[in-house]
Length: 226
Length: 343
Image (tube, rainbow over all chains, first blue to last red; front, top):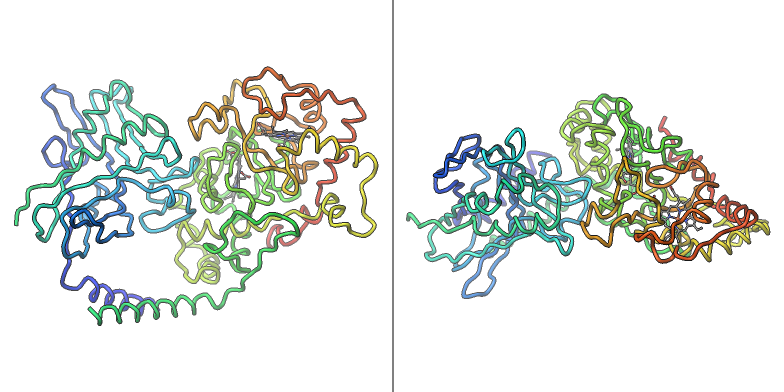
């Protein structure tokens, strides 16, 4: 039975995705240098930062041509700095000049009960006591933290009005080459947070909304290398 | 392009056939909605009730295997004879005797509820079960560990296969099984129900009739029949416990209007579900009635408007009301063998 399933899926993938595999590739950075887990980053003002967890949901991936939606992918991708295979997303689409995607999980999905795959609560991106997905999770330590152990923790999420936190990123694509290269730089987030004021946001609410609004600015199109 | 589409349909059809063949062994159960009751809120299409799923959920509910040290089952805090609550403890006691900060609620007619927990923080019955498994003062386990243990056990993989078509156990199948059991806990055969169904030889006593009148005047707006809750949130004016500091729904919504609002509990089987309120502060039903009658501070700024008028019942009225509340006891539910420890 399992083998049959496997063959069917493989054939399916071959036919549907066949020759035209294209990739959306995220390059994680911190202030322009490659972002690595647990590496110590020292900024010009001699403040330091280490990141131990960085994960977020990317959903509603959509392709546009001349302002018209051509295709929307119904997948929930989970980016995890610990897992480089999560940095790239394969897709098929012929012709587009703009893409958009959401950071986080829409409200319908948030009330849809138990889900599996990347949406399985086992992935640690789910609040059980206040049912709903954590859209974006960043944890680490920093000289700027007000906590004794210098830690900071941001679990951003919330779908209930008026504290919705899902964000949309829209990026123009200049040349229609094979891979879309997007840089994901944490710096604007860290710069916008002011760790001295708040080193922890772990619940939905106004603070989660404010910090989530910083997220779209972390994504920019990288110059195409092809 | 054409070939691709054809092949796509071929795949869809074969996958469909495979999943159909996996499903054919299960025995579907019809969820019976009692006459004149509203439609259930629970979405059965995503988790169709089957005998195999129900029995698996029942087994899990009574099995301490889900807790970190295998000492606490769901049933430890939700006992059938007491309407599936934990009697005697004001707040629940979990693993290693750790105290939680809330009274375990009854599990009755959950299919008609859209929010769960005293603060409504849980938005779907299917995800409720994650809470007790992970809660440090309840089962203090991780989902990974719960899945690992169930997968290793001798009995569970085949039971999951029977219920959900695969021996592979994951969060979703554990939750769906638990829900199939929880959602089946329907209580609709109290004396109150029998009277309203005009069953032969059953009628209210004078005292119960008087109690019903009082209830309709003062209580029914919130504790609305037939569920004996309108399933919304309200404040009945209880003063905040300074140790527990529980602000209720506000902690979920962060909206000032929700301060001190708690889920309006059902009153079905209320005779046996003591202690009462989210923090279990009242041990006796009499104390609750005394509170509503004489204890509410009408100047309390969170108090819901339905309770602004003092009731000041006399002794007779209190007894009448109590007598009516006792008509909500449903022994055929509390002693239903189908819900009890599976042998």
